[in-house]
Length: 166
Image: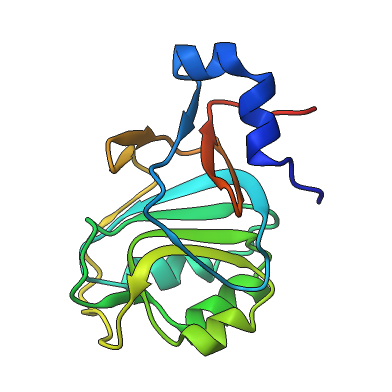
């Protein structure tokens, strides 16, 4: 699937930007994975230092979707590692955005998906299964709903209320 350039999307959709139907995530994310540009409908997840639900969602065959994880911005452990990156690739996810940390960066960089995260951290997360799937999340002041569209490239990350075209 060809991905639209985020700068072009912003330039040609000023009305959507002004109305809030198109939002720009703050430039706080690092780029990982082989796919530097990716897009797709969003699946949301809210967890805190616990990756059990991350694995549950990534185990779902999900052609072309993007998992957006609100990890509370935690910098104390990772929510996604190399095994989950490989799982996401194998199950057809196009990308993962983590408001938190990842680990196994070299392994994730070998995966044919796009990954954005705040940083890397070598400590693994808890495994308690606490969190909420398919809910409204807030990442750095930006509300994100299940089913909205995410567009990411080297210029940034956009959230759109609906799928966009050129």
